[in-house]
Length: 392
Image 1 (cartoon, helix red, strand yellow):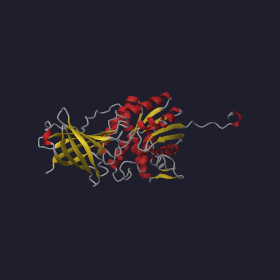
Image 2: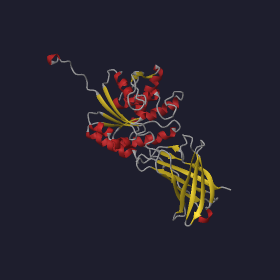
Image 3: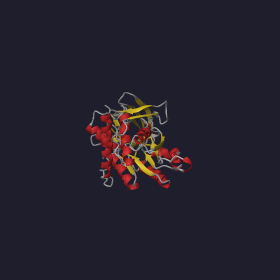
Image 4: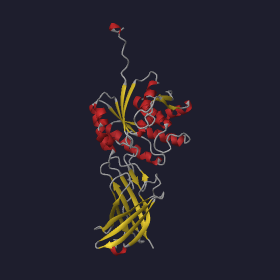
């Protein structure tokens, strides 16, 4: 019996800081993890706090400083880092693809890891799922997260591999919302089970399949408590078993990261040296650059060129696959020392700046080239290709 009749203190709660975006706050992943831990036998006391911003990457959080401030308050056992789902915006020929992790993901994950180490917290990397339309991208995500996990000696949570297993073995079990990116409650439950298994080294089988809590539809609590997820027992057991097997499988391969073949990106093809007198007139054709998922690609491109001394004056028009148009844009074209046609035009999408075009004259008389747009602040990139024929 304690002196003075004091009640013995219970075990100290494990404190978890989430840093991420909508993949974390949709369906309140932190709350689901708390509920799973509370339903364990014996229960695991758990406290969570989340710093989340829709669409944010780790660079966003580092620059905004709120997450850094929360981390530096200390007292955390785990700091869970959830990067943007494609590791930063990269669009290639109209399709969203996995960005080079060394551009944005790795540098800022390393910074957060260093801060976590200073405060005695363990870094946890959320290996998220690929988009529904691109299951093949999971291999790129796996490679990036496992490589970084090995470097930092961090815990990697194989949410994406668990999702892919369910998609392949139980295609009738929906994990995504209609957008093919964000998780529905079942998908978040699978993510929570995988996180539980990775953090505590225990199978989540037999834990609660119903979780109540306050929704966080935009990262902030909205409304009163409600049911976040309620699954039939057989479905919950399937997800729990898949989560545990995915975590166990990862232990066997975390030190065996397979090298990936080099990525093929749009590049300027070989062509003839540009005959400057061959360019006047109107060129029409296909531009694969804008979003395919939004119904914008392939777009039709119309380029009108007229000579003006050593340069060409031009007018550029873009017509998207859904019928919308951009332009006309006035532009000036020039010939590079290598004999290519170069020009820039405004970009009115959600990435500010200009699109840089470069083309060569192919052997069959077409203008074949590339379109590039980069945001120096966010390091987002859009890369595309064009193929134009002279209008007759």
